[in-house]
Image (cartoon, rainbow, N blue to C red; front, side, top):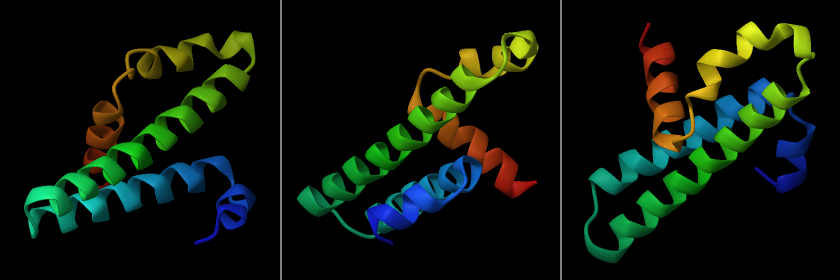
Length: 92
């Protein structure tokens, strides 16, 4: 998927796609070792960072009277937390 294709996706779909790519990179890392494994894990981390950045942008743009909806995400500072939330949502 080209960068322009990501930009054309709605934000929530973009987050879903970033997390999907992170998950796929982690799966690939399980089947490799050494530098290749590290590269896959680095890629996964970068995809998760993009997901977190997109979530933060969405939350920042919410009207101030929706602050109650911001609290659960305010604690999501670590990309791994977003990844864990994604795994929980997709398993349900």
